[in-house]
Length: 210
Image (cartoon, rainbow, N blue to C red; front, top):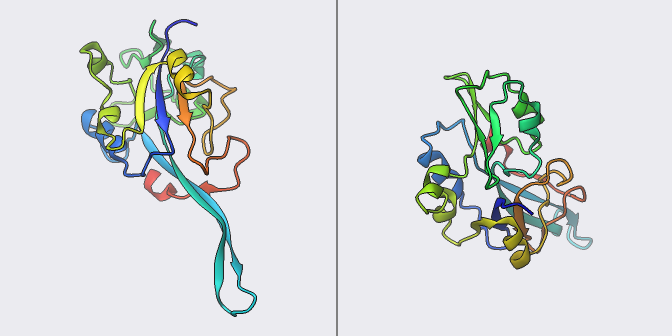
């Protein structure tokens, strides 16, 4: 396959500290309401009554894990296909970028992206998103989110090499199926991780994402 940069996310190591999310906002001077990287907490389970102790319940199948997600710099980016201004392009290394000088702010990419990666900048009237820290890459440095993770749950590299090292999982709940855009990510699942489409839980931290 052609060179395709990708992220590796180790859900088994992620402690939900959101340092990657904060580092992304800080590096790109984003206001609080604009997040190019988000950390979702996904969990579920039930409480079952103890038969011999009225009013007492015990946990049954309770689980929780975190997923750090940003633009997936997809192999088949639907945002690029739907942009009427041709403001979105895919570089030779697979990084997907928005040319804001061409963007008309129609938000088609935002509506089409299954990951919710494009974010509308209301002040400037254009779309924004993760750039894979292209400026840092050009200097031989890591993306800000990668360096910020205290447990090294985030890494990046060429997709085929990451797959050889970590496997082929790229879709766990609450992410959508990989069939739509073929995301450039490799996930090391948490022991509780559920493959996309088989989930029994819900996103636990939606108020933080509003």
